[in-house]
Amino acid sequence: MSDLENNKENGLIEFIEKTTSTINLDKATQNEHLSTILENNTEYDESTSKDIIDDISSTIDLIQDNFEDLQKAKDEGKSRTEWFKGKIDQTIEAYKIDDPKELISEIKEGLSESNTQIGVEVFGKEINISEPLLSTKYEDLNKTAIINNFQEEIKNNTLLGAIVFEKGSVKIDDTHKEIQAVKDYFNAKLDSPTDNAFKKAVSTATVIAQEKDLLPKQLKDKTPDEIAMIVDKGVTAAKVAYKLGNGELSPLDAVEYTIDRNVAVLNSAITRTCTRVGGAVGGKVGAAIGSIFGPAGTVAGAAIGTVVGKVGGYVVGKVIGEGVKKVANAVKSVCSAAWEGVKSVASSAWEGVKSFFSWW
Image (cartoon, rainbow, N blue to C red; front, top):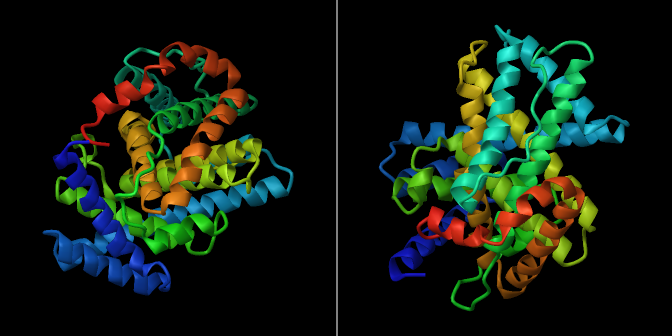
């Protein structure tokens, strides 16, 4: 890593240390403190800073609400497919979607194009692991066929994300400071009461780094809610790797948890976009999905998870480094058919990632 790259990474770490000092505050007080930190470290005024923090906070809360709702449904015997189908039904009704077929096409295209572009832009080769959607008519039995197809796309994206994280896994060194709040995040249980606060803090640090041009150009135009979703995916992946690495999670549980989180993020992206644009989705939903699940979002999420892992301390970083390899192996096993399609190009993945981003 060059001196310039090192300075940019250290800049992000400095802001992570500042923002994570807020994670033990109640929600309203944390938002106030994060808004002040944002205003004091950027050119954003008080009103804009407050709006950005509100966007970040509500997005992280929405993802967690979706995830908890999915877990409740599974506890009641429902499948992930049934849960997601119910959410799509709610979205179509609540936002009076003009043409449900258009929404279905957008979700499909956003997911499949994300996976294709990860192959092209990150690995340097096109990867064709998507199954076509035979019909976008969202009715009767075809509803389940459509949602199952989306589930496969999310599994494939989870596989590609795990490979990117594996190839760029945490490099252990003694030069990074240990931030206690980060260490506490990894040692707390999954879905700890402070996890949401931690993700809001890291999202804020990332927005500050974005405003100061410390992040790669691919993240320059991401909105605060997109940054929040990318950060949620990245720091969650790092924590899952830590929990698998230290034996708290089994490989299959780690994969299942990660896929559930990704489906929760996907539904959050869909509903956030529909809230903003209403029933005329017109390209917006697909673009939002691509922004988060495509190459820029996938690499950035892994990179932010890696940076956070570095400042969790030597032991935490070492366990994450071992854990990401175990997660990747577990996902490859679960998504074996897709892995066969990816295997030929995966060996060059990290070289592609390094060239895709300038300093991660």
